[in-house]
Amino acid sequence: MSSERKVRVRFAPSPTGGLHLGGVRTALFNFLYARQHQGDFILRVEDTDQTRFVPGAEEYINECLAWCGLSPDESPLKGASTDLTVKVSENHLTGNMLSS
Picture 1: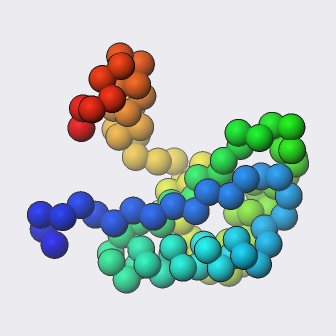
Picture 2 (picture 1 turned 90 degrees about the vertical axis):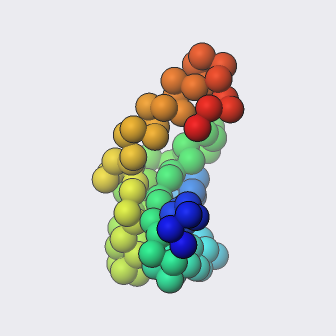
């Protein structure tokens, strides 16, 4: 697996209310897949729907995942891979989307 990329899976709920059972199931599957393959489980809250945004929902999602024992390797609270984030942002701003 040395020539392959590291497995990175994400769970990206929208903070429009409470975390439902289907969301917990999806998070669990992603978490277990990441652990099985020595990868990263990433929580990325999709707050693009501001008309339905519920204050406190993001914190509630984090609390629910913690209660279930699902600790993300990266999240809005833990921070992300800054180098990759900066590189992608720079590529987007310069129009160089094919750079790796």
